[in-house]
Length: 445
Image (cartoon, rainbow, N blue to C red; front, top):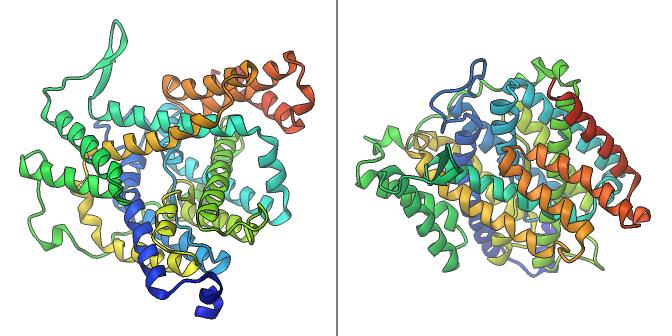
């Protein structure tokens, strides 16, 4: 075991790897409860006609299994201390844009995730993946990541009434006397304090504290016994294999945009996370990541598996840096994290106490962390600032990640051409320009 994971070469021990794996799990455990809430649209009491919910218990199981499978493959094949799970942002796009706004059945949305995972896998195995991702300018990648962060935070703020609709100003501050809204605000403050103090699992701990306080003040029903905390693993039947039945529905312009969004955002998340974790752990060799294709293959495998199980795109989590910070250097830490995901399967009853007020702080804080990308955008270059800003601002204002990406990718070639920087535009960007232009022309019909 030590020889396979190269403990001696990397100067690590079982103790450090186990602590690192546990630390990573605690830092990202919030996804086990946030993802079912988002995908099942639990924050919406009533849904538009024709829109159906995913089963939250099945999504919980799919989330844990997708995380376990992806993380285990990453640990055993790529041998990196990187954990995977359904990604924040992509789950919001899946639920709030694809299902809620566009009215696409969740089964078809899962088929789109499956298609994006298969494409990702092919691009990785053929080596084309690097060329495609390199064709997209870094400034747009940064703007997309930050825009998704703002979008997620906006969803968290509106879900609990901190921000609400207004007939005169469109949006306004919500009713801060509402006890449920106050509970959510308390959760945000508690989580901010924990993260500021350096607690690596601050988001997860913040959810626990908010839930406990909610039970103490009578806003959340507490568990009445052991069976309300630990139970058998719920059935996966409501979501398992649903993607196959609707695979034939993905061949439309609208679903092409959906698939490309899944694909591109997964590209950004994976690439950025791999570099961040490898850099922090001193794993980069001459500016390059060893076994990069294995890591990318692990990511695409996780997405395919997750879509079949019944969850949105599975991707590498930046929270893996917390485990590296705690000493993890090998894939053995990922094996530990994967085992913890499997153990979490027996705690599905806790979904009952994870209300919107408990998950909203996690959405808001994760949004803040994702928005940190903005500091790297070249704002002093107007031809760059325009598409970057429009990408960023369009996501929350149109309630759509896809629309934000489309607007930014349309304006980028325009501003760069006018500025005389045509040589810097990759041919792929012109193809995307046409696709997204057609998206705006034909989608309204």
